Figure 1 (tube, helix red, strand yellow):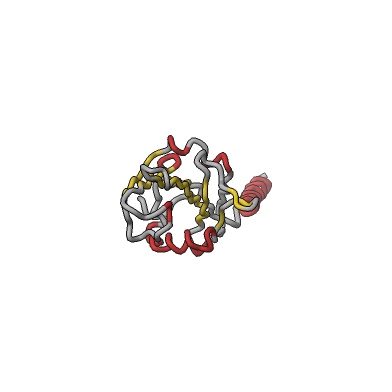
Figure 2 (figure 1 turned 90 degrees about the vertical axis):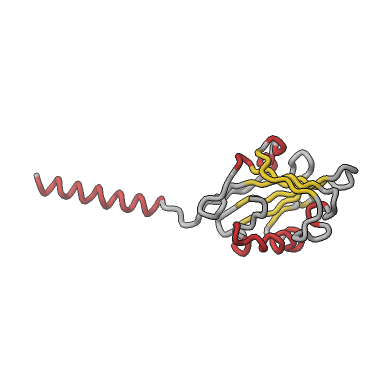
Amino acid sequence: MKKNVAYLLMLGLCGSFVLNSCTKEEDPEEFIADNSTFDDFLNWSLDATAQGADPALAAMAHGGNDSTVVRNVYFKDGQDPVNGEYPVGTVIVKHSSNPSATVNEYTAMVKRGNGFNPGNGDWEWFMLMGEGQIAMDNGMEMRGANLMNGMCGGCHAGAANQDYVFSK
């Protein structure tokens, strides 16, 4: 009887080990954004506002770089970094505008994960329409690791020590 109990216990432990090793994810979590990801972004947590010229911005980045431009940065669910990194699924939208309405641009970044963009912290960059839909160019969504010929990632690399986020 003791032998049977020991055998069953051993079988249970082995089965648990096999089950855990089979269900363990080989790759980290991944979040793939779609249009619904950006729904109602103007009602998210407004975590940063900047106005005027910013020496870190190129002349045309985020809708221009002059004294009249206001840049509002929204974080979905008020997301904060954890141990210096934003969790997979973090969504940030920036709205750049000016009083004369000659600037009205929406950009976004989403922490995608799963080795999507390892050179830039696994962030994916987006251009959005005013209502939060992913902008289209020649039938293609304006998104990706290399959006704007790498301009997004190239600039945000300046904030690599803050997980590529300038505003928090």
